[in-house]
Image (cartoon, rainbow, N blue to C red; front, side, top):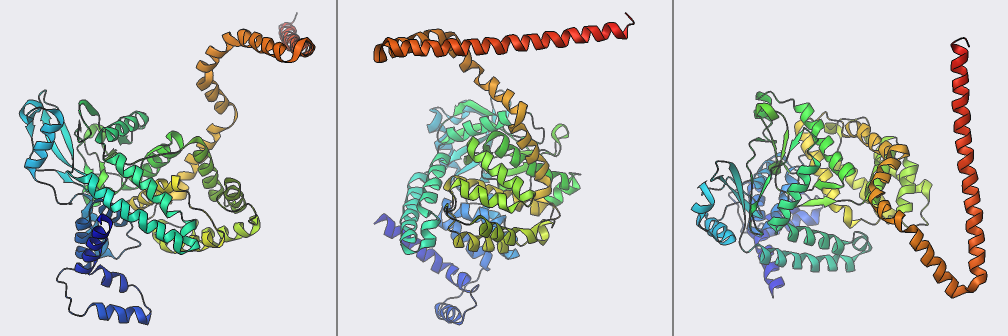
Length: 520
């Protein structure tokens, strides 16, 4: 019943705000235009299409608001008026009452507001889909931001996710393309991340980890958490003062280097992904500001850490190799990586996949972002993936979303930014650090504590193993094992003394040469 009632709410919202008309207007076939004229009978809308879409997403709740937030960064895929209106979803979601916010804070900490803060602004400074933020001042004078979770969020999200799961199951049953896209696994991933976002203590922990990771990178700032004032429903953090990154005119008038800002955004993204495997996965303009303070001028300010993506070492290595292959236009290597990873069936012909990837990517190299139609690229890639039965990897959904956000920000800041040229040196440097002596030394230092515990125990472990072997296999096997150990010891001793003799010979030769140089 909850599923049916939620579905009816969605259908009623679509009908009320005319979203069906908006969707049909983009379809050119005659039967769709006839259907559009029929559905328009008796309906009139006073508001523009962008306003209607924004209001509908706000009415439908947090998951739909987040969808609109992602769309708002894709100026190349949306009409200008629609993109401008959806951008208001970043910080203009209607707030819940101030009295309710005060009640939630007092309930979370079990004390009156006056005992917690010297001052508390009742009017929220930002109101997003999951929570809203108030400015406050602690008793010791430090300025803070107080983030309060919206009441009743869990039930709303569970209803929407239930609907999405059933729709995903229907999509999988309906077509082979649906099964290949793994919609149920994708919904499960978003289910996990959305529920994580509802626990503000988890968000505070994410912020603390990201702050440590970014400590040595002087182009981004992350607020410090006040852990004695953090709960699942309310968290208190350092107040950050900056200008939203979407206000380009204000930044230019203040003297911020916009082109450097765009390059720094790419650097931050690839550092978080390939160095740390821990990245901010909700980088829409509402969560990114720029500092204008003299001591931190031009630095990024990251906000809202409810959605964080993580990658394993295997994921990072695979992605880095793919990026490097793309940069070098080594499409055969890209095809081999897809087959080796299991993304495509093992019987796929390498040359056929290589040719298809080349046809999609080659026309778009060495061109600025403003000249690239990402919509066409995505359409061609989808056609290619369908042809070769490429399986979408759910664990990389957040990374794909974040990359689109970063590209959208780059397009707004500097349409001439060459994303590939900016990222290539960074990735090549990262790859160099993963192979050879630096990587070996790093791994050795990482494993040193384990070796320190294992090495002293080796004689006892060897004795136990020999004793166990003797009990299972008798004296004959024991004597054979001892002979093999003695043979190995003699070989190692010979190699060791040979190395010592070689080193001694080199030292002796060096001394002799020094004597000859001095005229002896």
